[in-house]
Image 1 (cartoon, rainbow, N blue to C red):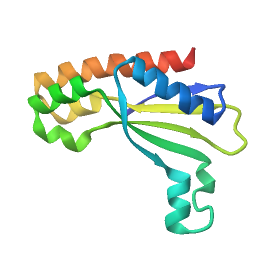
Image 2 (cartoon, rainbow, N blue to C red):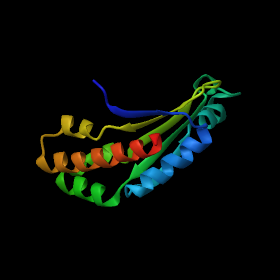
Image 3 (cartoon, rainbow, N blue to C red):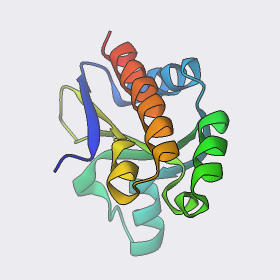
Image 4 (tube, helix red, strand yellow):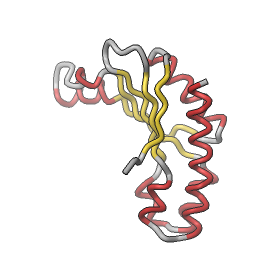
Length: 135
């Protein structure tokens, strides 16, 4: 079972992060949270504990209109928000991977038609953002 949409792009990690932010914003998503995994692991676990992952950031993306509709349809969905988007690149790699949660994952957990509508809209937007990042 796939639970992400993925784009592999020939960009530096920094450029991919910037382009991801821009593409998400163009689709109405803001960034509510940001976790730099390598830095966090190093701070919590010791000297460069996240080195094996390379550069790895999780962006908590939220489209407020979609989130409002989803929570109105099913308040428990708050546990699945925001939509996480990962930008990662292994040391020495020539491309950067961008992955976004597949909102259809929510549909698999709920049979609510309102959730399906929101997931369909979010899927369209996230796929468009990835297409934009891919050029």
